[in-house]
Image 1: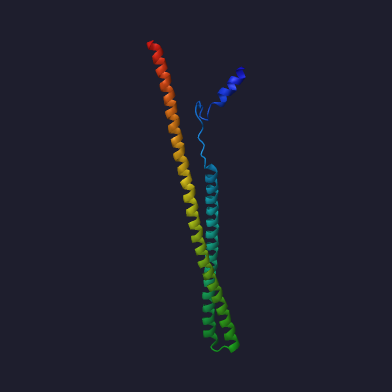
Image 2: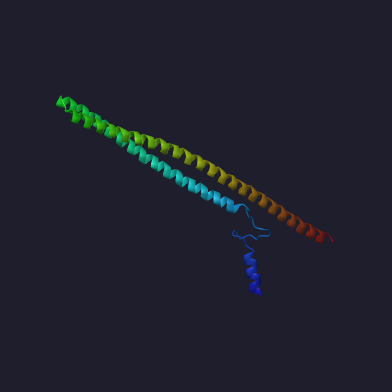
Length: 171
């Protein structure tokens, strides 16, 4: 019997060792908030991956630009040294330059796509964060309202106890 009372009293204690008189706060949209939080985290990861891909593409573009500049320098140097080059040699050099320029153009086009992807992912993250933040604020407002109602109930109970004790002492 003593152990039954002890366990009942122990279960009535909240985590901060206060007695809990009323119902505990429960946010009815907690599952939705949790889903929105996961969506925000996923959007953060996707944005980070998009930024990483953009950085890789920027590095590839810089490498292609360096290679193109080096090819131009080599062609100018070889043309100045040799004086006369055969038509096959000139065509081969020109084909090489065009291929390097095409690679540079491909990397530049890919960089534009990556930048658009980053912008899209950033917009998705902004939306997901706003939705999650809205539910966090709603939960906080409801929690504050719940605590205010509980405090009001507790104050009413204390007032009733005080009034009954005052009534006994007068009588």
